Amino acid sequence: MARPTSASIHTDALRHNLAQARARAPHSRVMAVVKADGYGHGLERVARALEGADAFGVAALSDADRLRAAGLSQPIVLLSGFDEADDLPQLRRLGVETVVHHASQIEMLEQAADGEPIRCWLKIDTGMHRLGFAPEDVRQAHARLSALPGVAEGIVLMNHFASSDEFDKPQTRAQLRAFAEATAGLDGARSLANSAAVLGWPDAHADWIRPGGALYGMSVVEGTTGADFGLRPAMTLSTRLIAVNRVRRGERIGYAATWECPEDMPVGVAAIGYGDGYPRAAPSGTPVLVGGHAAQVIGRVSMDLMTIDLRGIPEARVGDPVTLWGPELPVERIAEVSGTIGYELTCSITRRVRFVES
Image 1 (tube, rainbow, N blue to C red):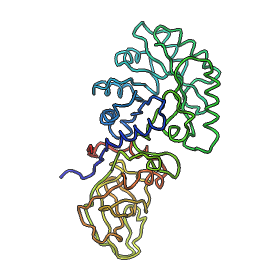
Image 2 (spheres, one colour):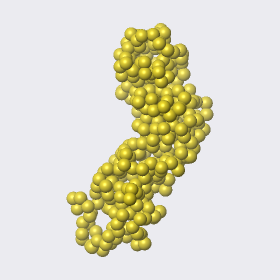
Image 3 (cartoon, helix red, strand yellow):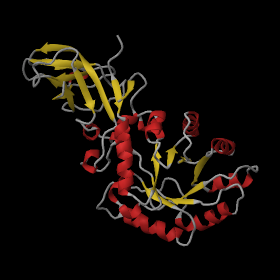
Image 4 (cartoon, rainbow, N blue to C red):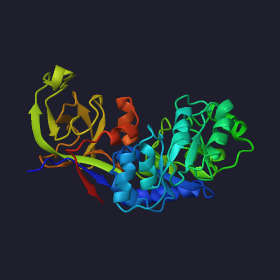
């Protein structure tokens, strides 16, 4: 019998979330960010569901290759930019646009052989301090790119926010000011807003928005879920009970015996663990649903299995469905108690989990 662990991908939710992004930024074009295998939801599956997007954003040329092989014709932007000169023919072959964030990339473009012009997105570091040109270097970088016959007209100007999930903090407003000053008078469309900025910073919507996690129904705003912003979860992770055991009071559960039974009680064993991508860091008390009823993880999550407190569900039986996250149990709740974000959890689902479209 096949392992009963599955990830159901709700393509209608993906389309709904794209529509929500458009409704929030009605005057902006939408780049659907599908990096990391569509945030763990499946690259080709997600892209087909999001065909209404104006462009796709990826982090690797191999992802662009997969999208083209799948028949997707929308513009594709390589968000991390190209790494070496040998990538340039591949960009041209696939018709992929690229972020330019470093002087070494401009040098490669200046030395490149003639070919079809490549559209470039010039990245400005306004405070993230990860990738991008310092504000004082932007005009020179823009001029060098604009002078190259191998660069297509219409350079897009972009940045990335560090704290846009904090709607009441000043950093995003400071980054907006820094971007406006660095790009004043320069031609080209503007792109600033990631998912959190789409949701909470309308001043940042500009010509292009770049939603990622929001398209999958997830929020990174502390204390909220995607549903608080009108989004729908695009993944349900589920499995089944493979055992229900009676365990006596005082007995301990799982590796390192970290949880002690306070009374004689039923303990369920579910076929999922960190080998499937469920977080090992999820502590006792992490919520799950058994047959639609609330229950909790007890003991340590192991590679293939987890144990569940069934005291509140005396009718639970072997074969009952177990939901780890989904529309009735937001992934943000699991992420919060595990010390991470929902993005990491969906991106961590492993290959032995069966994916199903719904």
